[in-house]
Length: 471
Ligand SMILES: Cc1cc2nc3c(=O)[nH]c(=O)nc-3n(C[C@H](O)[C@H](O)[C@H](O)COP(=O)(O)OP(=O)(O)OC[C@H]3O[C@@H](n4cnc5c(N)ncnc54)[C@H](O)[C@@H]3O)c2cc1C
Image (cartoon, rainbow, N blue to C red; front, top):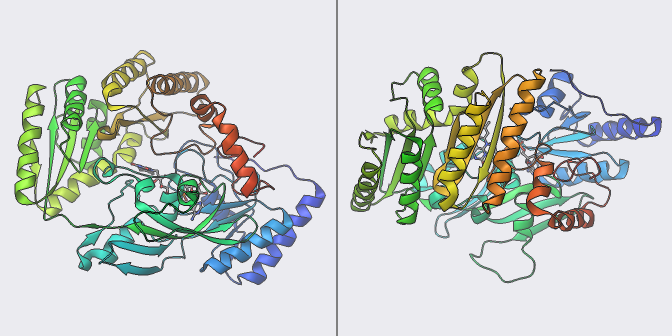
């Protein structure tokens, strides 16, 4: 895919070049201007157009990040923080060029406190790396967006995923942050106390800010005990409404399932083909139960009874760890499986989230719209949270198809917002959902922009995201 070059005055070009020369002096051997590296850092997993930064830097410490930010601020050069680049709405695209600050070499686990159930890590640590490190402590960090994303990136997108129905999202699990501001100042937000009434909650402000307010360099997180018993199952249903109604009834009965994921029939076909499985190709719920042996048995009995009423009687169990991993790997590979349905196509993963009582209606109307518009868009989702995804498998060069895709996506979002929901439960805004953020929040977006103006008056932090080209 081709990329767009930002337009610049001669004066601006000189400032960018001088900035990069100074960065070479600040981080010798850790600044890249190679086109392949720049393209990698400006391209996400979706169909969104890539925009490479002018340079990519690889700092190791908060102080080095502060040095980079101070230089960029001095030369008025944009900064785009980067974790692992798995975000979906063009978040990492360097729309105006600038310096990508890749945190992936900041992989230190700074402190683990088993007695307080918390940990502090550098922002480039990935969730799998953290759980590997924690294994012998009997603790784990549950938030799992599928991709092996960085914890700084997960905090910045307010990520969630399959376990959120039981353990919450990054919003509930980040206790504190170290952040480098746009001018190079270093601040600490929150702390290790489980509660605090001390001033504005800046931690919540930076969680979900998508790199538009500052660069997160350290994250303090809650941990949980590894459950005594873990059990997983899949159960197909004769109808989509049977599967969704089961999910709703499980939540309304307050059964503490750890994961409850819906895959529609199209996604099940894709998953069977891609992951070489032989599941029934019907709408299916994937479950995971955590607890004591007796607690898990009780949850399983309750869920079985609810599912049976909706025609879901054929539970397939995976109790050995390797069987469970295979099952969840197949679920996590759903995106790649969907893309494989149409070789050469691009993907657009989009998500909405609604109050659980409106979930069936929202999914069913959206599924009808997909069929009426003759699109390939498997439905899957973290239905326990009222959150579901479409993965449009599309040809971005086909104008008629793109018009139909945008129509279905727009109607799904308007439907979700009208139901009291949101235009994105977990993927975020990037530059792909700017209009939808306005549709959802109206004048409140101006308040968000005022916060941005206060913290980043020169508009250098990940410009063009959340608010559009002028930010
Ligand atoms: C197959 C697949 C499945 C996915 N499933 C889910 C899912 O179930 N749930 C979910 O929530 N997401 C999901 N995602 C999206 C993605 O994994 C998350 O958005 C993830 O949190 C991004 O983390 P990252 O490290 O890749 O961040 P990046 O993509 O590198 O960055 C994301 C944004 O955060 C900013 N950023 C990154 N690091 C920092 C930092 N240290 N400080 C400040 N800003 C920063 C960037 O500028 C950018 O705006 C999925 C993605 C894929 C490819």
